[in-house]
Length: 447
Image 1 (cartoon, rainbow, N blue to C red):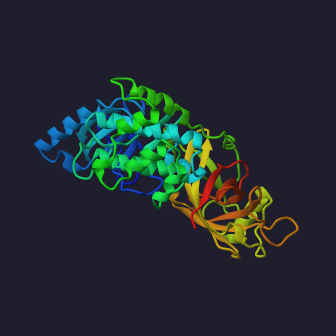
Image 2 (image 1 turned 180 degrees about the vertical axis):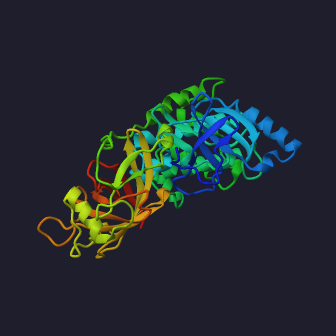
């Protein structure tokens, strides 16, 4: 699901009988999502809690309408859609509690891995259509459907974070189906569609259904149930359509590749700073409440705190990894550009966005971890026997020294290796200055 960041200072810590543990943010920044949190119920079970606009319960009529809509939402069949568990009214406003669904969102997967394989695309489209059809059958609409609202879990895709909005205004079933078509194209292309010519990437009958759902006239767009029946290649029976859609959608189950475990924190060590990565993926709620240690930062002179200067940082990194930045090293043109993606830890499963900007011929690039508030420089490390950095073509790597300038309380220095992969992507790996194994990830070129 969309990644999770720590609670902000002004965020509530409890809503109703639920304890909040993190704030949900979207990966693609394509819409303004409401206040959505990860929380724990009284029995400790993880849930997702959405705080709706206060005007939804501003007076008696609004509260009655909210109660009726929440009752309808709890009737949404759990076929490829997260179940609505509870609803209530409390400070700071009315809230909706839904089932917690583990796994990365489609937006996150596309951000890191690019387009989905052909054998996964159709089951994904079936699962998304099944989830929307379940919502529409309850007399509701999603209202803001997109790649960040489809979780690719071990049991297949699930539609999450739908509102309890009845059809009115621009929030209609037809609008949901337009969003479904755009989401399927996003998954097929690994990017947002730019025109109808992008439909050529789809095979039939998916191409015909997507084409129908992007019709300018909302009245001409087919209903979710009709789309699902067509994709399943069967008539719409009185019962069993949603169950069959859910069964076929399981072929789009997503399992993240195995990653090396994070080394345990040593019992004794020199004074220094160890960062706790508190920006967490929704796949592991327990880790949000506890510090997860994976990046080690240390001042160059061995004392805690401060920046220590670039020279001190370089010495600390060299002592741990053997990498030593050199003014002779420069960024090769083959890797120049802006790259972004997610770095992941497997045990426990966590995820944090990273953004890198590299300019050809420059002596340093830039790196930032937006959700952690950290940023710094990347100095190319010359390949053995050369005065320049290695070329980052497919299968080759570029090694850079990470020197954190801002946010040293939460991030530290180390060595970053970028390895070229097909499809405008880079494999990201990190070694902390204190040694050990850091979290890897995949970056995609943005410019």
